[in-house]
Image (cartoon, rainbow, N blue to C red; front, side, top):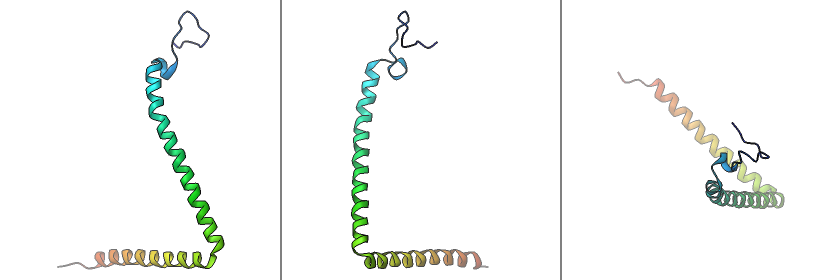
Length: 94
C-alpha cells in the first residue's frame, strides 16, 4: 500500500522508494559527479565540433583532401579484408 504525500497517519519518507534520506544522499553523492563529468564531456565535444567546423569553413580544400584520403584508405582496407576472406574460402588443402 502506498502512502500519499498528504497522509498524516501513515507518514512515510518517500525518498528513494521510502528508504530514507541516507540512501538518497548516497545516491546523490554518486550521481552528482557523474552528471558533472558528463556535462564537462558534452562541453568538450561541442568545443571540438565547433573548432572542426571553423577549420573546414576556413580550409575547405584541405578538408576535402583529408576526407578523400580517409575514404581511399578505408576502401583499400575493406577490399583487402573481403579479398582475404574470399581467398580463404576458395583454397582448400587436400
